Image (cartoon, rainbow, N blue to C red; front, side, top):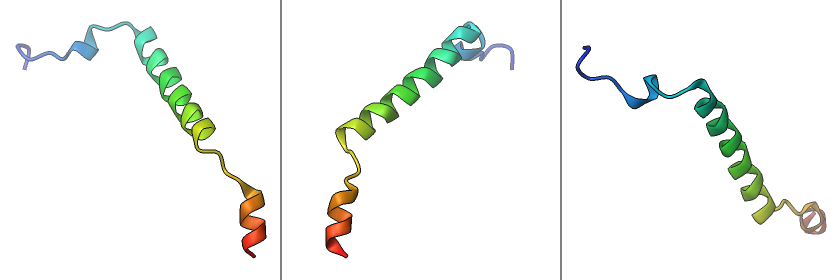
Length: 45
């Protein structure tokens, strides 16, 4: 299977680190856009 090589094999290792950083950044942004509001949960009890 030498004829079908994926692009990921030729990318530098830094690309993987950036992907992990970008993934964490997206999760952080999602948390900021949809924050957990414990005050509302407390009033429902």
